[in-house]
Image (cartoon, rainbow, N blue to C red; front, side, top):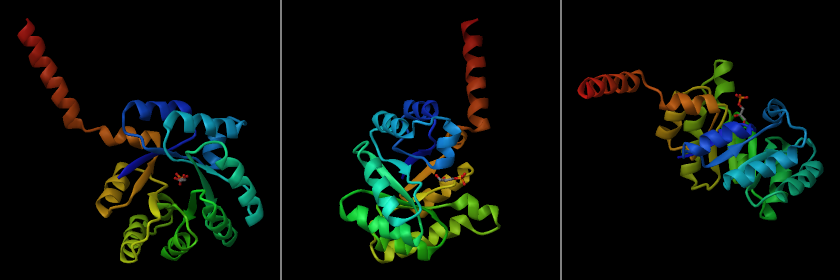
Length: 215
Ligand code: G3P
């Protein structure tokens, strides 16, 4: 399974890269706002140059023609840029047009199997089901991933599933168990993935014994 980081913060991206676990990045307008950089195209290019893997940059146009125009501009920033588009009727039209031109699209804000099926039909390279936001409204986020994986496997669909809106390490582990292609993970959760109290206790005990030996 590939690990993406869900952020537009360069320091967080650098940190995950230096841990050796990063395959790509996903951003969205909220994450861009949190990063606080108004030169968003420049920031996306910097992220692409740093990561040299798929980097999703989201369009803000809501109509198909606007999405296509913006998608082409974003795609021109880097060979690594993936155009992120919301999963609407206009979004599907824009996805078909961009993917026909060889531009990879990540269809985002996916909350149902039917949306995921349409994403694949329209030629999306990636689809992003949001598990945390479904859990937030007492629906089963990981159940959606299970269903999409089953349908995609049944029809040998090549669209890659990005498990998004990840809230905690268990989302990542369950995504891996289900065979999802990618999890896009906040920086905080990437760090939580490595933590275990027995690891810390083990290190403390080893150090204590080592220091005893040294006198
Ligand atoms: O990248 C989109 C997605 O991961 C957003 O997550 O935490 O805002 O629900 P969240």
